[in-house]
Length: 146
Length: 126
Length: 99
Image (cartoon, rainbow over all chains, first blue to last red; front, top):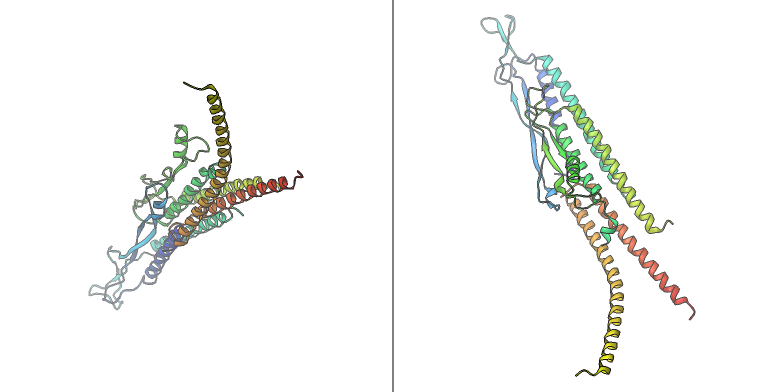
């Protein structure tokens, strides 16, 4: 669990955004994959974020009896596949073309993935800043009484 | 008797508690910047303190301030920028984080100063 | 029938008892003050220990609570030590007085 809740919150966000980057990288790498394990083209994957709820138990032990329900960061609820239809491209020379010459390509849009990548990077940097800020506050508190 | 004499500064301590909690809540908001349907939370302390002071329940320097003045409030407004139900504005959160950090540092300096004054008095200026 | 002479003596006895009681109270109250102060120091120290133990166990992560509690305990102990030093100095000075 750890001692410092604010660090845990930022750390959970960092790992969640990193996982999102991995999934985005996988989408981009498989933009032309027409054949997967089960024979269908590659389906685009996305991550599902969910707020992690943990009651702040340390406030229970103070004079007041109220619970300060706050969160403990973010977690990945799951990796889901995008159900939008495959792209259909006319290419009779392709080994995976069907009888009409149509090849079903993955439903990955490079532009969308690039935008998501920028968003994930920005969120990652923001969380790093939040973690540094928490650390500097904690170090400052250590100077009480010196 | 001794604590009341020397340490009538629990206002600063409660403000420190509030600032620390606010740091955690803002970190939580930043962590959930991409979570669908997440509504940002804030910590209300200063407004509650001001309203209680105005209504006369607390006088300056009194130590009757308790932790019940610190509250986590959810902001239900919906953002016009986002379509996934999330109303976290990352720039706003970063600015609040910086301001809160400075506020915390200020309070730490202040309480440090109070302790130094007491020690100086006890030593008799030597 | 009251005997006035006895009444007068009784008054004197009552008056002197009052003086004794007051003197005893005063010396008790100074002792009480010192004991009170030490009890306060002890209480602050106990609170500091409790908060530090909670911090170690991970029950809370308020660094400032730990630091402030330890600082309060240290300052109050220093205060009582200074008072004790002054009292001892005063006592020794009185003892040095040539009678």
